[in-house]
Picture 1 (cartoon, one colour):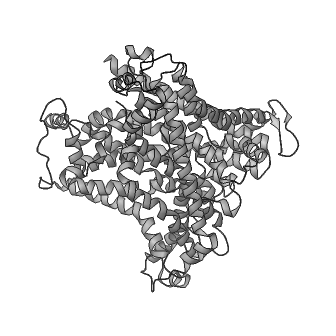
Picture 2 (picture 1 turned 180 degrees about the horizontal axis):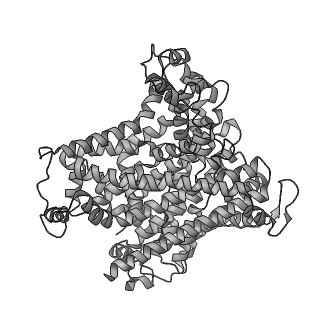
Length: 312
Length: 323
């Protein structure tokens, strides 16, 4: 079975639950009573727990520092240092940066680019995967390898030729240049993943649909796409976030302020004269909030997708 | 970064009879090619043609204004003798250490600790919570992650220096990103921070395949924790380890954003990596032909690494099946 469909594992609320749920396996009801919260806890277990928590604190610390210091004035920061609670909550840093980069515009650019890429790339992936997975066209292994190449290449290799192409056709410094490039790059991965999902699509369903006289086009959109919706939604969300996080190509092709994405706009202002210590912190905060919001909304889908990529 | 997609070739399943034709019973297979048309045209226009063009540019002298001039292997000879290029690849090894070796080994230990100890003895909720915390930096755009840490490492009033001073370690204060001796290390720390969550999440999902009875049996036989870890855990989740190592190695070879945002390759060449070097040749030095050469060389390295990995994985799998 393919990854996404068969990776219900991390979805469950807790790890132990998930393990129970995902093991209807051989030995029948082998699930032992889990040692559970009531189990014996040896000193070594407490040491492991302490280690795990220390690492979590270390990993979370930069986020907390940014959060704490984005609401201070530079004077407050100088007086109390980075660990002190703000003397009074100040939104100066955030508003300065917000206005300076015209943050709502950058947010809209990022949403528009990532959203368009996600939708277009899923559509292209569906068409490709239909031909490769269901249609089993000839040379399909090589076709998939070719698509994977698009995903593996360092983007520098595309940079100058695309730069000249887009200049030639007037798409340079236009969000559509970035949308087209990432539609191709993301759909390359989508083609790879979805082809193997469609390769195991239940044959009976397709036969039944064919008996009802449905043509390929209809079967694709009325039968296959609805049934594979969970996989498609994982792809949609991943394409959105990956595109949101991209840097090199938007940096190169979106030069004017009005077209920049959130990461590009924020990185370009580092080192600017306006960026005192707390404004810089505020800029980092504004940069991480959108992705944090996606993470919270789509946590489950993300977990499913991360494992899907690997558990193939 | 690591959230970039896995790139193993699709594993070929055992050839079933159905493999010879389309699953869908109806007329010939020919018309399926129409469905590939849009994807293929786009792939050709955005990837294949630019790739070929870039390879061509690597054999030319081109500064972006006059048309490219064919110079044969000049750029490639220059590349082989270019100290800066070799430094950038040496730094790539540091990136592999920071994005592959350290996160994968640490991730294995953390995943096992979360799954075997914390999840079982202290409850799955706590384990899930810790896992989500480890994963947090992964969701950030790499540049934003770099800006977050860059802010902490600021030279004059950066959080790290202020804290060091406060705890009486003022002597350790340092211009972390600005001095050649610590710049590469600082970038590496950022990358470890960014990467660590990816292997943990993947390995934890994989561990759910491990049958607890195997563990119990090994425990009864007197196997210590580390023995069980090595003999059972690592063995069973080996496919995931392969995928994580491969995807992260490719990401490490391609790394650009954090270097751009943290150091710009400096000070001097202390943190330069191939992708940044190529970018700077394109757009700062206007040496387009030479930039294309660096980018092509990087592509060749990545393709070789990917092929070597996949070959090794297939060999390991076959050995496994032969047992």
